[in-house]
Image (cartoon, rainbow, N blue to C red):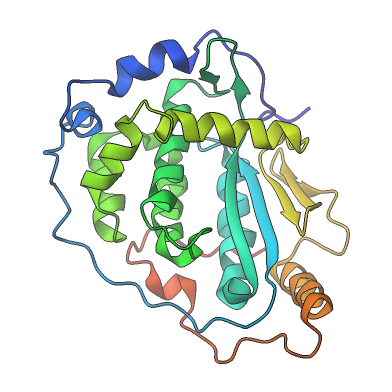
Length: 273
């Protein structure tokens, strides 16, 4: 059994999550992280986007836990390098693994800090919408920064640095993660974990392509990867599915910049197998 398969924990987010970030507005999350609420808002940079291919895109989804080493390896070794090649061909989505609780909360395997990490990933994607789903290059550099050193979540300087370096408006991130309403961070996390459970994705990291499980990263190893677990294998399969959906009109009109070129943090190393 995977060390990152979701199980019920005593720490229930509906109880502990508010104690982490539900500090009197404004700036609840910023206060918890010891940031001034506006910090980083003026330091954003514009990220380039590749030209988009026409036609029906291929759903590409990963189901992860934000403090799981298999999730880090999955993103750095497979998903991000593949998106360098095929971002314009896919609708990419990150979903999270946990357990909804009877009182409307969520429990996370690695404790309440993981639930907060999950929320930060979801909020970063949300505040870069529309369109839906948002292009991965608008938030994935931030997510990569977080998950590369996931043990540091939610240390103040760490989250601050990831936001500042990767074009995330911290004020908006703060508002989203601190929002306990129907469109706020906790609600998004609950919907995300409910989706993962409904799809039977209980192992971090589960990779799904076009609605089917394509590969699983579990205990530091790839498994159930029909067709191979290398970047080139995933790229090949996604191009094949895209071609099947769109006929000859299947390629990017022109190649965009590589996703890795959008990431300013030199701590991110593309570790191909």
